[in-house]
Amino acid sequence: MQYRPLGRTGLSVTSICLGTMTWGEQNTEAQAHKQLDYALDRGINFIDTAEMYPVPARAETQGRTEEYIGSWIKARGRRDDFILASKVAGRSEMEWLRSDTNKVRQTAAQINEAVEKSLRRLNTDYIDLYQLHWPDRPLQGFGFHSYDDYDMADTVDMVDILGALQRHIEKGNIRHIGLSNESPWGTMKFLELSGKHGLPRVASIQNVYSLLARRFDYGAAEVAMREGVGLLPYSSLAMGLLSGKYDDGKAPKGSRGDLFPQFLGRYELAQELHAAKACNDAARDLGITPTQFAYKFAQSRDFVTSNIIGATTLEQLSENIDAHDIEWTDEMEKAASDLHKRFRSPVASA
Ligand SMILES: NC(=O)c1ccc[n+]([C@@H]2O[C@H](COP(=O)([O-])OP(=O)(O)OC[C@H]3O[C@@H](n4cnc5c(N)ncnc54)[C@H](OP(=O)(O)O)[C@@H]3O)[C@@H](O)[C@H]2O)c1
Image 1: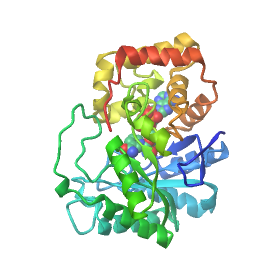
Image 2: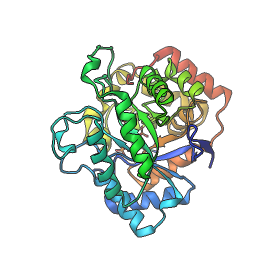
Image 3: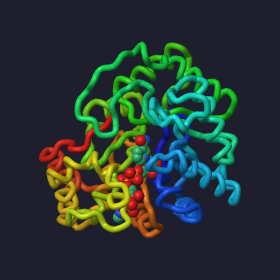
């Protein structure tokens, strides 16, 4: 298992990170624990979760994913064996995330509530990497195709957000901070403000990135490289489309596309363009599986720190970890580049 530095924190994380957002919806507590046991046994030391999980986000299930990780930590007592990342939601209509307001925002009071509740659910004293899940700014994410401007006066001051996070670092509740679904401007602004005011520096950025979602290459990648804010790509298997199992145009029974078709909405254009199938066919022509091509592509970018994988079964998890064992060749790079020239980035996001 390969290790890479997590920004400038001094921590080393494995170049594969275990995603958890299906736990509590598609996966039971026992299955979550088995995935954790298996991933750690395979050498993975990096786990990603969020206060909002599982998905689809619902008031009835919110927090279950962290609870399952918490019950595993309690049962196994292995808290120091891995780097734990969680997230606080950004501006949202999900009023049930907070106890005393229907406006979910990244104010200091709401960050305090979110950190305290996550620590309780996780059965831990500290979260290693605490990420802003998406911005407090009303920046369109999760599948947008054009930019709409907004009023900065109606946003929480980014210095106040960093200040609230700093107080949790001082208390020992969190160790480092990161961004998610953030733009190049937002990343640079956070870096500028932390330098100017002596506030914590962001260590990572977690955005969508895959053979079908390459917007990060256009600007954000340079920020990641120059500023030491590595990408933690999510959905690099395009939620399963790049495993090849949707190639006949149907969602297999029990898959995310079958259970929650709304998720694959952001991949509609990719499907219309037959881009996903073209990626999968290119993999087969290279003599590798679509899953190997998709995951190894993401992991092999210079600006990537750790590739966040997702699985609903142990078989998938095993296959997905193995997928990273292949060597990324010039021939594979050319195939990925040709696909990019042909389809650009049919999946949009921050
Ligand atoms: N920051 C954010 O906003 C954000 C957003 C999304 C995800 N994330 C993080 O990233 C993690 C991974 O995201 P993701 O689940 O979308 O990643 P993904 O790797 O693109 O998709 C994983 C899904 O694809 C299917 N799959 C996985 N391996 C497979 C295989 N070998 N063969 C066939 N199907 C397979 C499974 O779904 P089915 O079995 O249901 O088909 C699995 O849940 C999440 O758990 C979360 O931690 C963060």
